[in-house]
Image (cartoon, rainbow, N blue to C red):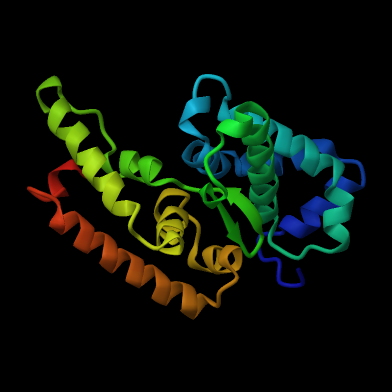
Length: 214
């Protein structure tokens, strides 16, 4: 944390010394990015039952309670720590609400920083297709989504994960490398490989998918 160009670590120290408003302002800066992560990884069966904002709020409460602990040994950037806490809250909620109905253990990705709900092929397919289709296109879009989801299922889970991190969560290359426990050069090579594989997938679908991408 010696290299702290944004001043985050200094502000966190001040917050820990009795300035909760400063901590609140720092937390709010990261809400949009955390919301993208939670929305992407929330099990579809829990849509309507769990609001991503509630998951983030629980993570913020834990961050406030554990701030001194984090500052004693900040092993990762502050945003990645918040992301880790939100991810753990999401895992707990999945297990509580779904129990035996949870998908198999492979639906949680075991990464360098611990387990996290997987960015599933269904969620990635929905993100890739993006915008709402016109009624006349709905049937075609539904078929494309199924085909895309089936093909994404055949990708290496780490390739799917790196695409989720870089393109949907919008993590930087450095953040992605740290989350996955890779060097930046290793993460870059893996990302390029995953993009190449995704391009092959899209071009192999009947009619292609270019017109459907947001």
